[in-house]
Length: 282
Ligand SMILES: C[S@@+](CC[C@H](N)C(=O)[O-])C[C@H]1O[C@@H](n2cnc3c(N)ncnc32)[C@H](O)[C@@H]1O
Image 1 (cartoon, rainbow, N blue to C red):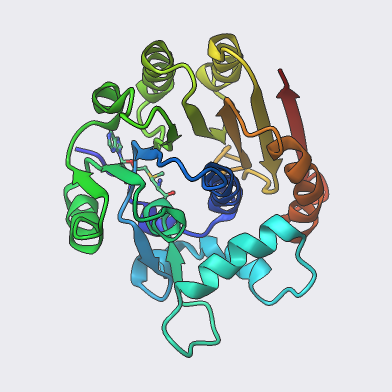
Image 2 (tube, rainbow, N blue to C red):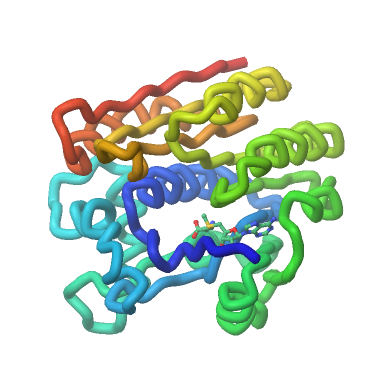
């Protein structure tokens, strides 16, 4: 039984990085009229209430989205992302009460002719996801393993696809499963734009993970990492996270170069906060 629930973590610094990149990639996908299929292999509940007990218990959003909420000096892509988050608040609300998950953010950017495929295994989160999004045009919600199901969605008839892979890495096997699913996805559709999120943790598997992704990428990739939090003496806490984007839009690295220094200063919880940004352009 899976224990991870994203409701405890929604809007944290890792979501900020992940969703900023997601928005930029989907903006790029929408620059062409031709439809595309977005596959979210680990979708979560879809949207979150920040005043709910889960979010209040950890307060993680206070060190993430809440730090950006009142700022008027945001660089363009962060501002674009925050505008979308603002649209998810209750009508007329001036305070931050809701946070969109990847399904809700994506739904705002998909066009009527695009396809949206959402996978979620946790029974509670699947029920919430299905209740909120399965009626939306172009969206299909599955209670199935996103790693194993990805192959069934590729290649899409439109020959355009973006994939978000956002496992919880609750199980150490998630690293190897992600690598295997990426490899299989690229063998079926080498042009897929694949966004892979990972947590910055000191584990052997994590150290090898990005090297494996670099090897698999047939062409361009962009790798952004944001480190803002100090882990405690026992090693608990999420120091930071990364997004590895295979077949990244050619503008992505340039865009992130302007945004990441701002995010470090806005989200830093200690003096050693930092970012790295690497790319292979083709
Ligand atoms: C980090 S959360 C997803 C957050 C979401 N992508 C977002 O950005 O709002 C990871 C989710 O994956 C789900 N999950 C874990 N293993 C899965 C699997 N093999 N297939 C599909 N979903 C899975 C978990 O229940 C959890 O809700």
